[in-house]
Length: 220
Figure 1 (cartoon, rainbow, N blue to C red):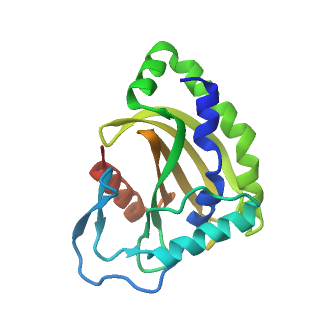
Figure 2: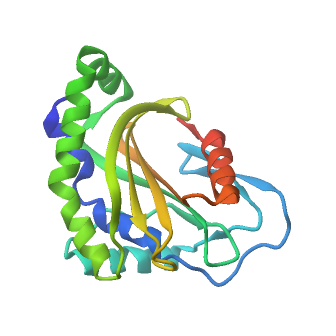
């Protein structure tokens, strides 16, 4: 695994991230409880029953909006987009699967991290610094700004090793609030899972929902 692979992980993902500030949906279940979802047989997680899960048509519109904002064609449509209810939503989750050529396995990631963890983190940070202005330019068209500085990490998630990017941005609903965002990039061979979790900073309910959802994730 090389810095070229790190660059590959971020190619064409930014239009997929732009939806996280503005997704809404018309309906939500009323019963309180949790439901376990199995996404493409690779990612399992639990969502509260009163959250909104966007349908395929909505996810397609989100993809098209992202492409329009950044002027770049996306290679995928999200497999899951969900958010807390009622609106304005205080937490979001998105799961996507993105092709990787050549394939990058979990063994590749672990070997590279063990051999030179600091270089992996540097490559990750450098790639984000180089590529993220495209995302921020798209978000700025909707009045959303970066808050603070991004950070990178290598962490376990759902039983796998993930490369993580965390950053803050202003909320599109209330510019005085900050949305904390974490992208988990999990190479799984011929594709990677991109799991994005976002919540309003300082909202205890949103933070608790984030922690429970994150802890429920299992990746195969």
